[in-house]
Length: 189
Image (cartoon, rainbow, N blue to C red):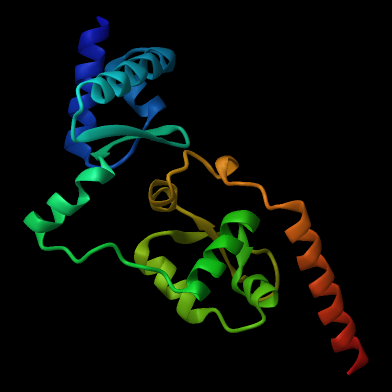
């Protein structure tokens, strides 16, 4: 299959699906190699950037999605009458950070770190589609394990969890010192 046809087919599939599609699935559908898919995706990305188009291709782990460029969000809102971007509370962001960096993680682990009940934050993150159940811990009660979703990656502009910024070592040391102090206070009680 020629390069232009591969690119056009990828574009058509992504447009019709409306969600991300794994490279291996595109390769299977088009009967070409994953390398040919990746090459066509890079060509499409460059073409969208050069032409000043309103759509773009984004990579999410080993999947590709066609989506509207963020700079056209306001115009899209006017047409669809969808409320502006939803915001997360500080508690929800804190919970999401814990899940992103420690996944898979249980509710109990999150609450141990935060020191408060996290039901509301977890429910809001599930509602926004930023987290999902990724399994169950092999322990009494079989608690749910949470992890992040493709929606999380899209919303925060990263291709994979490995792209998340590393924590500042000084801040990490402060956190460790605070945790040790709290543990000592609890032991003294």
